[in-house]
Length: 544
Image 1 (cartoon, helix red, strand yellow):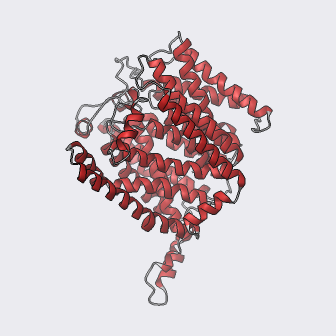
Image 2: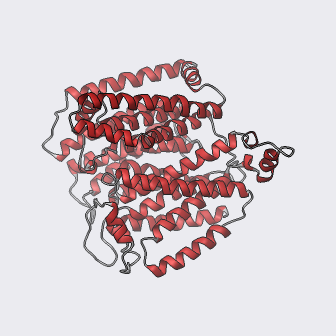
Image 3: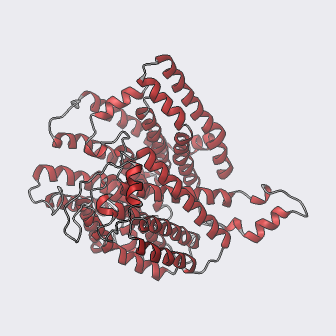
């Protein structure tokens, strides 16, 4: 698969993605009635739809019945395509990313085919097999098999877990975005482990060192060759490790939740204590040794030395701690526990968007490496906090739940609250991904600017001054203009201070405008979708 092919596929997909974002509103090209945004489906209903014999028209298919279906399938591969386009053709890891892209496209396409008519499924399935085999020269068979297999298995597992654990809290589009993104990260963690560890030492040595022969012939050591720093390894360890703790501890967590509902106080405290003990053992006996093996240093000691090696990092840590303390104190003591209007609730929610901008913008501009690590730590901590809140783990569960309830809106209608995780992930993902691609300041800031400034101003101004609504949506033209103008103003200030270098304002404004239209027409959670799309478009439009 050559770079030109990727460029052509990406460019053709952009207008298609907007068409699908339009149809996800429920207004299909066939003129059917609009479907509600969030359709709460259980797994039995999904299975019934998939096994029905009724033919489904392609443009009307699962996207109208399952909001965000096609954007959920498209955006993760688009982001990876943009990263490949931004890299020099001879850069380390380009071949690896191409295989990873093929595996993502294969999995998203196979999943999408299941929702189309039987004839399209058969033809599309055969085409996918041919394309997946013939899409470019395979220079490293071990690489191809390892990446393709690990990504496919990861996608299947994460999607099943996502639908089982979050089925009432996410749309199918959000579930697919999460599943595809996690499958890429999980696959890369597996590949990183193979790359860092000399497999010959793990294989039995007999008949003159069979392990070394297998290692050399398979060329496993060259899987995924691209620079992975220590902070990148920590991102894998902290985020994926905390998710793994939740999956492994799920039976215990369910018992904790059940014991609380039955008022078995002593049992509830004992089970909660057991969970914290299991989590600590998982960190000490699982995550810590794995990280130690990959970075060749004791993780806790490395982190301490990394933070204390710079007075700037110590000052940033103190600044963040102070800011969070003040922000939480204001939220607890100044915000009313209930609000009577949606505008007031919206202001309370956007308060944390402003807080994120105040924390993350100077942090990334001053020390991108430290911000990379801080995002990993914060993401892991928020996942743990959601475990504690949802399962009401003693002693903090009820207090966290009461605090977060005052910020919930209709998008948090399910039992699991994800908006705060989406907000942090939307700011963090461009920072993490930007380290692979252009490594430009603007690429890393794309999530912070779109969520902390653009989305905030669009929401506040749209609700306060909005009069003209976009067709088929509650979003307003005034809100979209506020999105574009606020980000443009921020970029102008950063450019005038020589913090961000902008070669073409036309290109940047095109990217901002397209992102604002996605914000206006998408019913998916803005915190998750917009930063990924903006990051991808930025890399596409600025690729040389």
